[in-house]
Picture 1: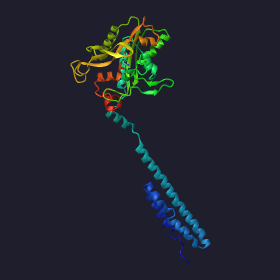
Picture 2: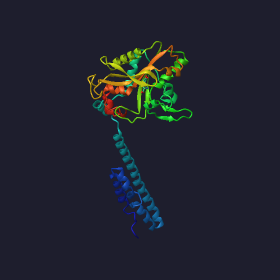
Picture 3: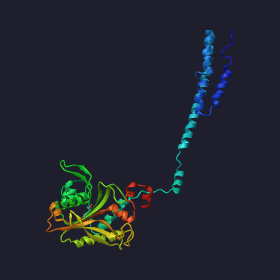
Length: 357
Ligand code: DAH
């Protein structure tokens, strides 16, 4: 009679349990499992060898082997639970948010609070100055029909002066040409129409907002930029009122030692028209490269409302007169903060933004 294949089962089981007990990591378990309880284990080999036993002996041996397998499998299951739980703790520890750490790094690198962008801040300051002078602040659409952006402002279709504004067209002519407004001047038309409709003249308003031109951005131009428009319609308004408002604004916004002056110019919607210049903010009038050694820099356009514009909105030019002006908000910010290249205003370089906080 041959020895039972299970003669060594006791020792073999003890060895298997020792192997399982020695596993330190989940990887060791995953790699070793197949040799302990899986296809390549001694238990599986013994299982196969039972086939050679007498039926009676096979029964008893089968039960013994079953018992051994159960104990080894239980040990593996317990080890798996142990190692998984240890791995979870390691992972959680790695993910732990130490609030103490956050506080101490906040001390090293102070939080930077957001602040209004330089253009928005400039717009607000400009509005404040004009509100202080008795103006109201009004808004207008950025998408305009040809009539508001041009025709009502005395710029007929195909008029050569349209070349002053490189226009983005939204829709051509069907039923109406629609454009991105090239200046804030069309808001004048909206305000005058509304005042006529509600019989609420006079008007003393400023109208800030975004404008668009097909300009290639450079140090002094952006394709999307901001202007602020001014409009006064009242009885007995003269050119002296316009000059006074421009000069008062210049001193209030740029500084009491600053001067303004008006130079004859042409705009279709004003007659007479002027460009207004202020003391160069870089050299304070001494003469420098920025002002081409004149001591002056141009800020915007202005003039007395052209009778054709008053007629377009149905205002009686015999009773009412007025003036308008318009200039770039970005340009103002550039001059006030001495920003060499206007593109810095839209690049959102945080190093630049921090300097102007
Ligand atoms: N709209 C003009 C421009 O963008 C600026 C301007 C000139 C506005 C004269 C006015 C004005 O109100 O009277 O070039």
